[in-house]
Image (cartoon, rainbow, N blue to C red):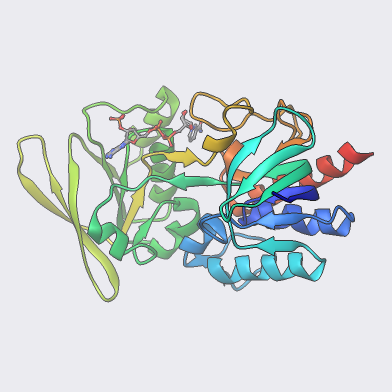
Length: 307
Ligand code: NDP
């Protein structure tokens, strides 16, 4: 099999991957970017992005990713709509195999494969994605100002999102499947002390209700098996994220949840020449702007690696 030689291989096409591509192209690293299975990444599932500086009137997540892609292409990034399915980081240059059966030998690799929000798996949840169903309160909470919304989950993210939404919305229900919160004490206190957050302990979501305007309610079941209907317009999932790091875990150090560990304030991993950017290494901030920033850092780190 012919092995293609690449200077800088970028895996992933969210804000981290595209920003890395823009910087790496402009630094003459001749990057090749593999888009992966969800071209554009998580932002393409958001309707409107209003918190990315530079877009005073907001922009759709899909359009924003198209613009970033165009910008990367303008500087010569070789973008391929395929996935990387296997890596060997045991020696340099690194060997990577693509979904269409090619083998690539890369001097540097930037992993920007993101994270995937977990959903409950209800058909109605799928139907109303982007129309009331969201996995990011910071991104979408603003659209539900003064309305009633619900957050599912009882961890730190759920509490943080509920507290954030409580500042914008009329009433926030927290749908918690057990009779305790998993979140840290400080985060629990924020939720318990907010006047407009109501915790529905030991409740599960059965179905979402809605019409052409989007979500209008949720049907819940309590521990006795009784159904309850709540009227809501926003339904926020906060039941965890899954970092897309599986194929790298044999070589790259991750935390217990699978997030790739980077060194200090850099994007360097434990393997010299492999860098990680965006949500695959960030369980905390998970914003388009922070992912883009770390994509820039990864390209700069890759550039420095050659010097
Ligand atoms: P976690 O895994 O900590 O919590 C997930 C929550 O969702 C749990 O309450 C869990 O319930 C619930 N859940 C999971 N699956 C379902 C389901 N199918 N139906 C209903 N509920 C479900 O995820 P987080 O995103 O909250 O946090 C991830 C990591 O990031 C943690 O280590 C957290 O501490 C950290 N973090 C820290 C922050 C901070 O310090 N400010 C902010 C955000 C995250 P159960 O408890 O019953 O399992």
